[in-house]
Length: 382
Image (cartoon, rainbow, N blue to C red; front, side, top):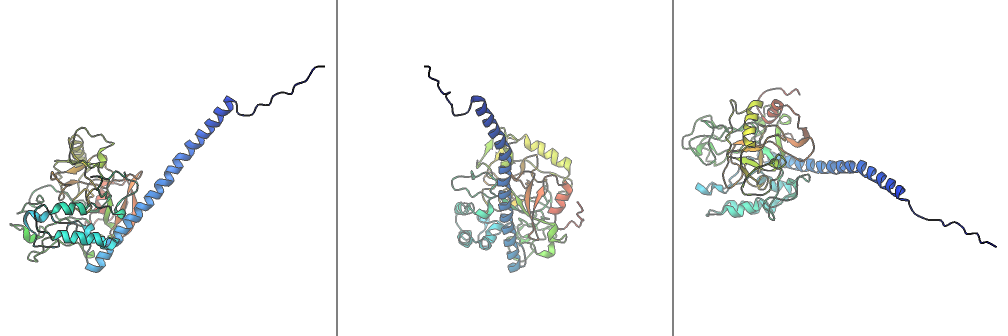
């Protein structure tokens, strides 16, 4: 009698079935990943908008108390003079008490009164202490000057004005000429009486004879175009932290840093043309002298640290930069420092009425410059 055997039932996937499942999972991940990334970026952009809102509200609280917005440069103690004028601070120093940073403000206040050689070293340390409200979560986390870098991603606007030389301008520490009259939200201006050869009318920030070392901020009456039509602040990218960097710079790298030693020029320094920007940008792109401390000193009153300008469009295709000192980010209005961000398609911008918007990179150059200029008198229609 023969014995009938039951067929063996095998459990599991065949190779083909396994490959099909893996392929389906791969397709689902491919479809899902961009959505997840977009959701994360939307959350980061929302946090960035909130940070910018905190800055703009602090500026308005300063306005309520002092009847003027904060200046781009401040030196509370006029007794500190000569080379020790390095002992100064940015507008963010004045905003610290209004952003729940009174302790940091008090430490900087004490340091600004120290009349001693190399006193600025401690001031630099304080001016790069991390302040969360000044950091965009979309930017890289490798802070400049690590481990004590205070990455900052926001700068107040000095408008469309740039340094072009001549009777209206002077370099940071020189006398005999006036600083350019900033047409934006704030200025970085030495008071008129400090120049050895004052030229009446060149500087509107501080009347002669007031015994003030630095200009005050602007009151609402200076914004003849309206607060809602004037850029208050924009984003910037933190650099890689290098004190000096000479070599080939790729387009993937240079938005984080800026080029030095490039002289800006324009027929009208308030309205730089596309052609003038392209000429300068191509020259800057070919340069080999770069600086990587962009966005590392929020407490320092310079472009690339606490200031931007609106001469070039947001996320400009060419490098930021201009003339500058060897040891610090750029002083004065000496080049092109447009806002930059890692948000796809644009940058977060605060306006002088404390509103915050996401501005598209495709904005027309003249429209952008007019938004930067608080007093051009032109109607913005697009």
